[in-house]
Length: 352
Ligand SMILES: [Zn+2]
Image 1 (cartoon, rainbow, N blue to C red):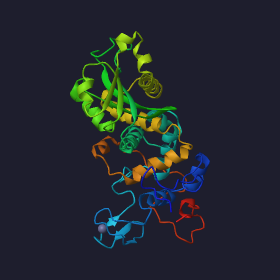
Image 2: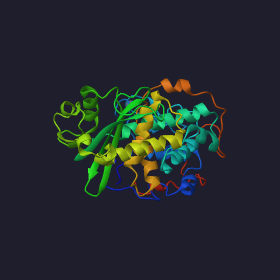
Image 3: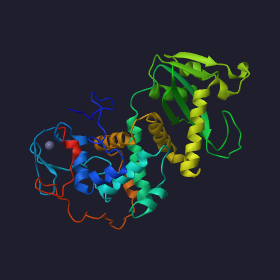
Image 4: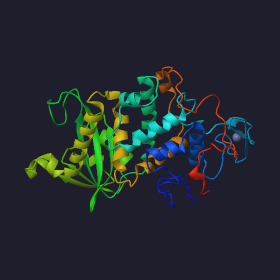
């Protein structure tokens, strides 16, 4: 059986059975919230229900489909503890938003989401994207390894400002990229407060496996930041080449980030949200070779179903949208009955 507990599951998910192949199939599979919730249920508890409170695998169902744990007697919905907890947005709208979010090569803005889906306000669309980015940031848990190119760059601020370490009014971002024999591997990006050895060391420890080979320029902070790693400094000044030729991969990565942020946000992003945007970029970049956008959709939902809500703080940002229901989604959710001929086919259940 397919076990959707890790990105490197032993059995690969199958297009058209485990995840939809295109947006037409997405809409056919998920005509109402019941089907969406069943899919989340399948992703969250592939081996069957396990109570998130007491760990009991035994539960019944109440009249609206929530589990009633036999261990601790609590009611548990499949969305409890996830980014969908107590959401006012219909799950069908969430699913379509996640499809749009994962289908493109670059990101989508809250303005776009608000325009194309029945989402009551720009703020709500913004909050939905914010939660999805939280999930993306939790997805990159495996550190980079092997040979890694690393550098820092400034984002934001005046387009033709000062360059180099020390430019004012810009945010310093560290980047690292795996160099493979036949191309590039995975990347990481992160905001760092300065280019001191301590700041660079914190980024390196969080993102690169110790013992890896790290190629950098000859900045004086790197030798101590890279204790425990194989350090290969490139003396950019002595080489006579510009930095983007001495460290071509990581500089190409920085160029892609800048172009992506210009394109998606028209440059109007705020420094406080920069870490989220960088995480989103990295999530997409690291899945750029994924055979199917549907698989990325499934992986993001899998993360969402497994994630604890990171914070309730962003709930405060949710304005109260008018209840907008897509056709067919009205009133309390009913669990799909076995005799309900209108039930969607639930192809993901065919293999279990
Ligand atoms: Zn329990």
